[in-house]
Image (cartoon, rainbow, N blue to C red; front, side, top):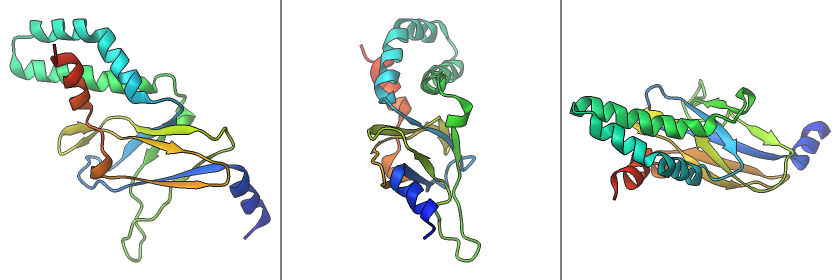
Length: 170
């Protein structure tokens, strides 16, 4: 292996994400690697806005419009977590398929020589069969190590469930 490549591998941590969700429409997600747990931040913002969100929902009489308002509240609050992230820190993940055998390959690589610590691979809201979905996967980074993470149905985060727990509960 080339000495420069080996030196890079030895002095950085790497994250290799892969997307395995053909039911996404479109089959792509925007993501970032965050330094704090966004689920806690999402909960805090929902709690801060709970009274206003409840009032807005109660004022909407049309059930279809109420569902659209609820969706806007939920997705807007989650995607707000990306507000402080610069454009060069937001990535697009799509499935990568080998031309020869259609097997998934790892084409995306994030690397840094930043501190070794827990980070969260976090996606913006995507739609799976019309339902909002996202991922928030904790990762422990270490210099010289590569972490492979797969975004699958089994590790999806349901932002609707978190929203309902905090806004619709008493």
